Length: 452
Image (cartoon, rainbow, N blue to C red):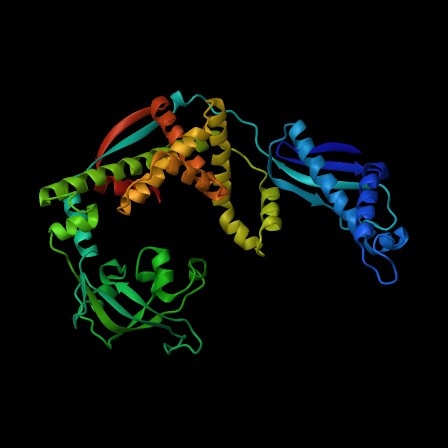
């Protein structure tokens, strides 16, 4: 066996694996013997089928299987020994006129394209200057949240005529180029929240609407969010960009929420029985919860700004052509080149950040121990039980449940990710040159909107 690497450039290479008959012959022969023991062929006792017949029946398939196993093991061992940091997985490479004679060929050469991670170093984080936002919650913010909660836990009514804070429920019907309902077109029944409509003329028309009223609607104006637009007409978000039709919208009923009174029943529903006993305590508790949430929002903004600053300074290059080819080859469902191009920029940025983050973790020797994961999972389980009004289990039961949760690889991956994120955030806060800025919630939301 011989394995070599041909460097194309700093980000691309071709690995060649040459196999001779002695590299695979014994393994194939062993597999043939195992198959012969179990083979059931009319006219022969089990285990006594002639080896020549066995080779004709399954010899080629077993050869291909064994070669694939050898190649997989060999490639992985080579990448590890050579300390090659590859992106994606090696892709088989064959010339257009290249063929393999599995029946007669004894020696084989296989080529694999590989995409290599760029070589780079992250400078000390203490040189990085980043704004750290402290969000100040005002009485106005608390009142808005109080109003939202009162409406969320309020009573639904169906008045005859719509007002600006109401919702209308009705049916969307796709129209053709002549303004008629399209045969076999899109139809869907859903809600329009009047004050969320971005078309001000339509918004004015909907105020005063009643059952039976009809409106011509562009679904892309029912909300600023694409997910809401798609949901309104009952399509996937990815399909939305292909829809240029207007829709007929027939109102079936008006929905109005009558806000709940600020009373003990509402306090108990939101915070648990007896946790809050007056309107003042209720507002204080909301302010406390808002502050907690805003600290998390501020941390996310800090992380995003650190990410942008590092990516802008490093300007990493990736083996883009290889990665696009790998995405297409490895995708479970067929994917077009156009789809890959549309989504590649986001994928590339995500991969660049993953590489940078891994360098930071390695350089600062950040580790997450299994005991930390167990304790963190126990904390999550306790919070979950408390939110459902259930008493927490004793420590032994919690530990057993946590271990059970972590047997799920996806859940374990998420929890490890949370802990690494937490440790990285502590690193940014303690190392970067942070310039603290106090802003109102409104100012902070404008900053986030500008970022988008």
